[in-house]
Structures are given as structure tokens and as C-alpha cells.
Length: 230
Image (cartoon, rainbow, N blue to C red; front, side, top):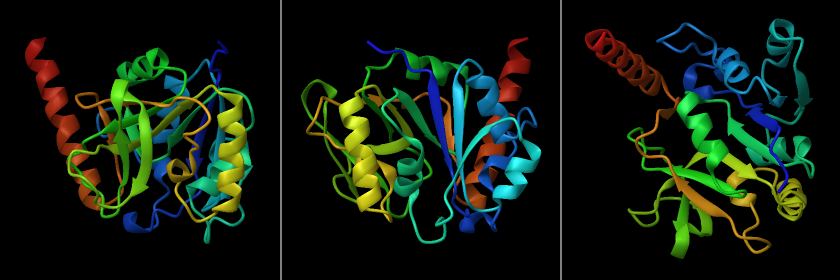
């Protein structure tokens, strides 16, 4: 089994629902850390590649030490195309730039099966979510976009893929379907891919101002609970 030593952060999009704010620069309300700073801390032992597009110079100017991949077509392509520019056959963890999570979540990722899609039933529902149809033994049967079945979980924006065959075909699919989300291009007929449910873990995505407001409230409650325990 090949050890995962690489993390790819998909951060090329504009974040138009967040007033054009680059999601990498969102701050954790509990710590004041920029989201990208938090990723660097959580994955300090990993090689990190960041796919950028919108406000790329701002990111590179503040974090010149990182390895970047530029999606110059960010205005007309989806996260799948961004991923195609960065992935190769090395086992990788792929994460969206709008996610806030903690050390426990990193541990869950590390202990997950070699080829995993992380799923949940989030409180902040998306308008057109990527959903996962899960079969026996938690095997992923399909990833699709839309409402679908109410009990089908949504993708959490985190993938862990070891198989070089899957990675090669995923890259090809993402190149062919440039406007798709990355998960919709994931090939499921090459090797088994498993759904890992993270309900109950702190893993929160911010897509709108309301999402961020709810994150602020959540983090304040978490801090209050910690103080009461102490």
C-alpha cells in the first residue's frame, strides 16, 4: 500500500456567493487563522499543492513558499478541471478550499480506506448538491448532482485516492468534462471506492454569508463549552 503524502487544495473559484471573497482567506472564528494557514498546520507533514485562479496573485504574494498550479480558465471551468491540472499517479488527498475542520477529521481521513469519498448529511444544504449512492459494505455506487433520494448523503468535498488507475482515469475524465465538479468525474468501475460518513465530525463548508455566520455561532458555542469544562 502506498502512503498518501500529498494534499491537493482546490481553490481556483471566485466564491461569488461570498461577495467575491477568496475562501482561502476566510478566518476560523475560533482561532483567527486563515483557512489556508489552518490547512498548512493540519497537513504539515504533507506536500501541499494549491490550485488557484481567482485572485491568484494575492494568494501567491502572501504564501510564496507553496507549490501552486494555475487554472487560467477558472472563470469557465469547474473544480474537476482544476483537479486535472494537479493530479498525477501519486496517492493524494483532495480537499475543497471552503472547508473548516480539525485534527480529528485529519485522523479520520488517515484511517479511512485507500480509496474513499467522505460524505455527510450537512445542516447547510446546498442548492444543487453532489450526492453519493452507497451500496453494500459502504461501497460507492454512483455520484450524481441534484436532489435525488433524501437518504443519499452529500459529498463533503474530501477525497482520498490511492489507486494509480483511478487517478489516471479521473484526470482524463476531468479534462473531458471541464465544467463538472471533481466528484462527478470520479471513475467507480476501476477499483472499489468507499463512502466514509463523517456526520458528527467538525467539518463545515462555507458557501454563503449565512454559512459563515452559522460557523461563527458554532465556534462560539464550542469555545463556551470548553471554558465550562475547564
